[in-house]
Image (cartoon, rainbow, N blue to C red; front, side, top):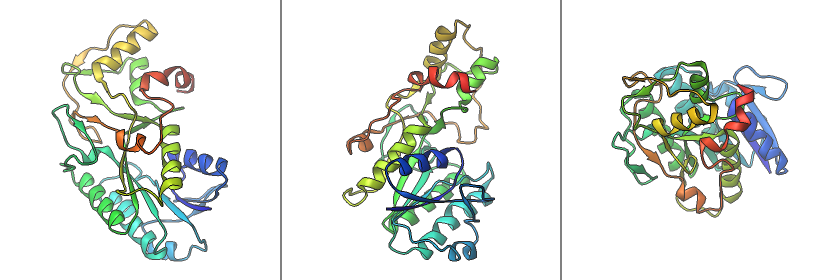
Length: 271
């Protein structure tokens, strides 16, 4: 089996490792190219048309580079459209975001919950999801990714920059990078048998901000961070929800790290 991996950054490299270990051939694309990937601009139809590959499965996990609406439209919506045009009939898995859920009431959200983002970037993610699903592809909505070398929550806590927003009730929905990669491989292996093709990709135990920082304070024998106002400028928006992964787990996938707290010992030395 041959994978075309569109995006070779933090998540993409982990996806590549999982597919290679499972016996797949992997062709990776990245914006600038490197020793393990081909230079390709997903927003340029000519670049996609020039690809000389015949994949059995495509994963779009490219990053917008922290850009705004224009970057989102170019990388996600245009990128997926160009891939679908170039490889008709080849299943495409698109990594979207749980930021499309704008709930602020602390409720549990499933794939059947309303996904009505309140930002233009979120609206573009939803449009991309619709495009991929209409073409028979798979959409995964990923929670905040952390893992070796990356954890905004842990970094802020250890550096003393953390703030508990208001009363700390806001839930933190996360997914370990390696769990995200194994889930995507699992869906690729199961893609011919699954029905509805939209999945939340999150860990099994969303933590309130207060619960997370209280556990970190105990673990590292430090005081709780101070309280402060909510951060209205968060890139993913200010939401308060518990993302359910029940649908994906029902397919036989289980996260190695059911909670962020289960992974702390393995990543603290990498930050």
